[in-house]
Image 1 (cartoon, rainbow, N blue to C red):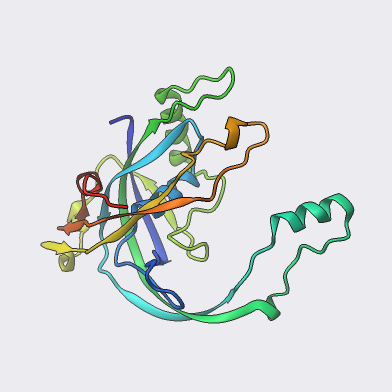
Image 2: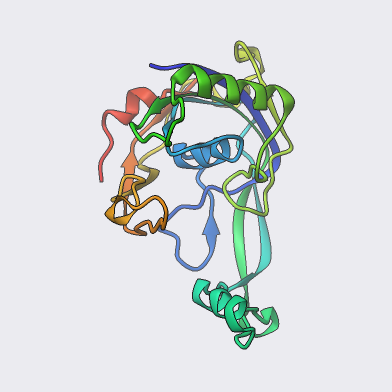
Length: 240
């Protein structure tokens, strides 16, 4: 294992969507490792390393709330934006009143998680750049201490922003809810999406980077024991 970190993450709402639910959003009881990887990447990330989540601690009781939201069914096309920038003729905007739909969501409320993670070098190097583990560790450490990020960290969905991220030496296990004591089988859960290009652009062209959208869903079957999900342990039983 490389250089590691432990952080505490809190938020008013969270939604880690179950992929088997089609029309309405329904959250898993606990975060997926992929969602936590995305949160950490909002703080600091480069192609030179990958984030690996080793442990997730659930401190607060699992509470659900039902809400209804207006969602748009489409997104602005990249080709439309390029055309508007080139000649100004194409209108790249969307009229939400024409494409929105109301959807119900069952989401988590008042969440507090501990995340233990480390990063591993991918072998991808920038030109004339030092890609040592120590370098990336120090950058991540500095950003965590200062509360810096380059995009808003979220808890599953973009609407549910993180309230606070705190770097800690050890997790306060005495704060784990009594309702989470014991061994709870969480069933099969989405681990993350594994992109087939491995983060390397087509034809290995880093100047005109084009990445593949093809990905496979990876699932695992974790247990939560006294509030702790040992992701590293259950990752060995991951299935595609």
